[in-house]
Structures are given as structure tokens and as C-alpha cells.
Image 1 (cartoon, rainbow, N blue to C red):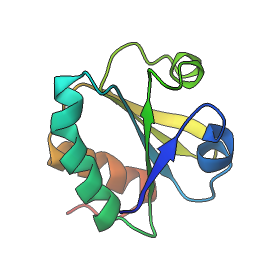
Image 2 (cartoon, rainbow, N blue to C red; image 1 turned 90 degrees about the vertical axis):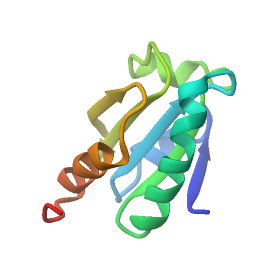
Image 3 (spheres, rainbow, N blue to C red; image 1 turned 90 degrees about the horizontal axis):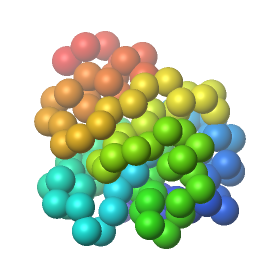
Image 4 (spheres, helix red, strand yellow; image 1 turned 180 degrees about the horizontal axis):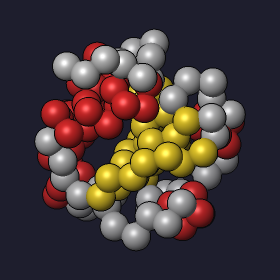
Length: 111
């Protein structure tokens, strides 16, 4: 699996310093919609391997990072490019909507 496990300690090196755009799934183990989103995130990580870095951050285990980026609900997906948060999606979204946002982020032609 090409998913990175993120936490407060490695977030800066894995996400903010990444030369590749990054999609971060902020989740919680007790969150039903988060569980429903997991297979979609895993599929996107495989489909965009080499073009997009994908990571998951458990908000209960890493409380500092979500507050730093204004994450108030889960699931929340934040897209980073050049070390900056450039797009945010809150709630369970369809794979097609996430693909559209990823394609815009990485500059891929529309599908």
C-alpha cells in the first residue's frame, strides 16, 4: 500500500516538505464515514502512485496537526502543494469528486 501513516512528529517532513502534492485523510477510528472513505483513499493512493503522496492521520493520536489546519470534523481531506494547504473537503465524498480535485492539484487533464 502506498499510504503514509502520519502523526504530529512526521507531518512536516512527510507533507510540508514534500516535492510531490499530498492528500491527507484526517480520520478517527470511531468515525463511520471515515471507515467508508478508507477504501476510496486506498484506491486513489494506488491509482496516483508517483504523482500524489497520500497519507492518513488519526486525529486522536495526533491532536496538534488537525488544529493547526483547522480540521474540526472527520473525515476531512486536505490537499497540500508546495508545503501549503490548497484545498479541503469535509465529509464522505464520492471517488469521482476526489479524483477531480486531485487532477486539478496535480495538473492532470480532465477525465
